[in-house]
Length: 176
Image (cartoon, rainbow, N blue to C red; front, side, top):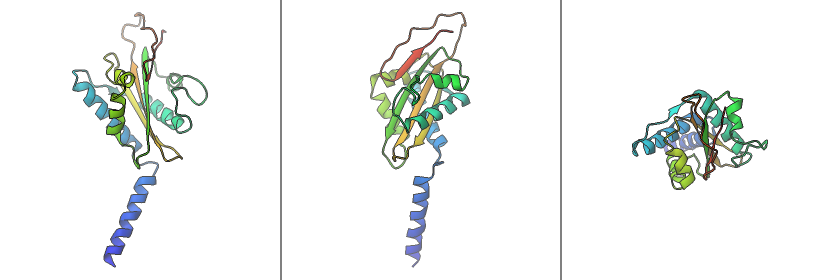
């Protein structure tokens, strides 16, 4: 009888853990940031700083990916338009997107997958990026989605920005 009760309670706890929409999306995002910064630091690069607005923009993009897995937004606009929605100023940005079908998103696997792609790795290891925002969501289809948004801030406001480039993950620069 006691064994049956323990099994039942464990099963209930497991179901709540797997289906709860608040299953610590922020914690999973923090784990992705930490794994990303470990990759950068291990190669002599500065760790990326998190920024609230950038994290909110990434969370919005993750939610959008549950409807349309694309670097373009469901409304047809480029990913960079989310920066404008959240009042984020940037000289250069990049976006990495990911999905998996694990019961819970695996942050280490997400970063490993990105590191296995030259364009996404280039975004993660971009020496000129200073900030990161990460969003994580679970879709109604049972898939987990993650987004990394990177940005380079304006240093010298009179400096000319780099030209846009697309390198596997989405990466763009823009003038003022």
